[in-house]
Image (cartoon, rainbow, N blue to C red):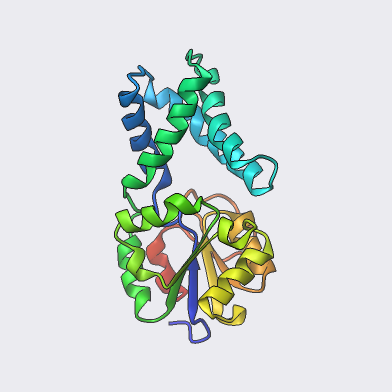
Length: 228
């Protein structure tokens, strides 16, 4: 146990909640409902990186939530040369958001590490995800009881890596930055954002990408036991 840390903040998507696996299941569901004969592997090959690019633009306030939800689908369908109307894309974007939080796959080790940390620290969530569905993700994956607070970008009025969302989360948690640590999968939003806001940080580096030597990192959630 790290004696200086009292509060541990987690990102949700791509850190605890297996976004890609749950997203694929949501698309399977809505494509079937709309009777769309889409090659899922081909679609996801394009959609996954497109979605990350759109989220980065959304994080930087370059696009709106509506543009994110429509554009990522439109671009992916265009790249696989699948003819589809704007009306159907709009329907899919709504249905996808409806079904996405109903799936509840978590990263390997999530429950074990939350059980390990729960008795030692106050646990919290800081997410750029939409308020309407992040709570459902926690509830449907049966992990909401581990967390004392959840801060999302709509509550804070800004998105990670903006320092204000970390300040908001600290106030909500009644935690001190010098006694807090952030764990997430995005170097810019989660790790550098937290460090700039005065918190410690650990990079969840599932894909083992090269990072600066001074960045604390783990490749599996269970490795948090070495740090906390």
